[in-house]
Length: 257
Image 1 (spheres, helix red, strand yellow):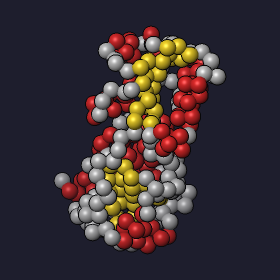
Image 2 (image 1 turned 135 degrees about the vertical axis):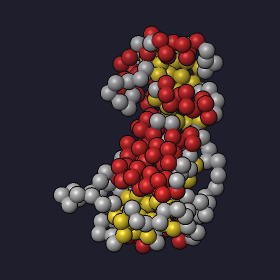
Image 3 (image 1 turned 60 degrees about the vertical axis):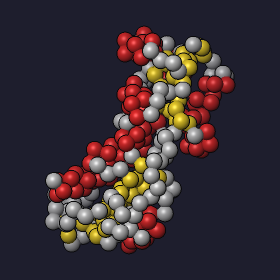
Image 4 (image 1 turned 120 degrees about the horizontal axis):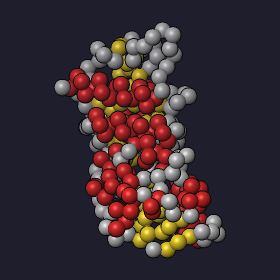
């Protein structure tokens, strides 16, 4: 067990770069899991982390201390100040893990259900949609190149372990995928003639959700065969994209039951 108290320490610098840089994560193939829940979810699906990083105060917490006692991972203890500098939230968890990013289990399949994210740049929204997709039984996820990084600490934290149940494909050609899709591509659009609740959602679907500001790009919307509207109060212009995705995905679940 090593202890680090200096920002000039090379390992701390590497950790900070890994937490903050998608390019660094892609280059190393490593990601950072923040908190016991994510670490346990990862271990349940894959293996124990290769490295654990804890804060001095985190080492005193009962749950973390119990986990460390049975761990075979390399353990590094940071001062609370240094650990807080890495944390993605205001109330740090006290423990992080460095692991290899899981590889996608299956190639893209244009015959099964999919969720397509087009330009969604908020990692919290991306993570929330991944969590809803996993809960609704959608396993195949495609992200356009301008989406938030699916494996960033903030996205991982928002998804609460959903990543490990999904096949996540980043930097995808969404119009190209939809052009050859054997089911129906479907997108929500204000002013669409068809209500979500009367659309037939029982066949294979590729649900498309667009960016927070601009929505789905015209070329992606054009490649989607079906457009639906979520009924809402006339005094409300739109929904948060993560909320809209949850409504659509679970209406699909309802119809299929």
